[in-house]
Amino acid sequence: MASQSPQTFANHVRFVPLYHFFVLPVMLVNFIWSLYSLRYGISFASIFNVVMAIALIVLALCARIFALKAQDRVIRLEMRLRMAEVLPSDLRARLPEFDIDQLISLRFASDAELPALARKVLDEKLNTRKTIKQMIQNWQGDYLRV
Image (tube, rainbow, N blue to C red):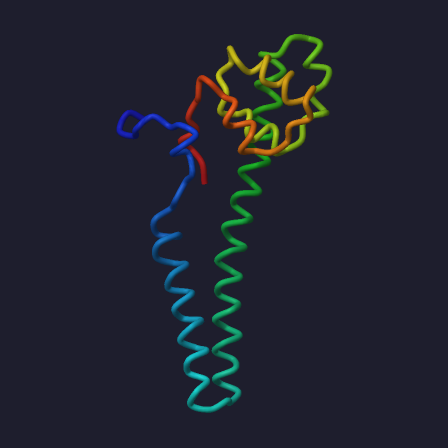
């Protein structure tokens, strides 16, 4: 994507403005308002408004989590296919040893550095996303994330 600045470890976190800066704040304000409205008296309607506000927040969070889980599954498949092509045969045999966090983190590595990084991740049993991402020297941006 030519219009975007190059992605790095420092700026790779994705914010969706409509979701993070509109939907979630509005849901939170709605929840706080429904709690505040209880000061006028507890009734079925006021309690239902609080429960509905909580349900809307849970719905918004679940929608985000479901989208991220689907994305993680696609990344897992993509990385297994990519690694099958890029890794040497001894590491290809170890593909089932990679967990989802390792695969998700390694997706930012270039093809040239992927074999050495993959070996290090498996040999040292590294599984923290942040740690693995920080080891990447030649960052390959992922601009199609959810």
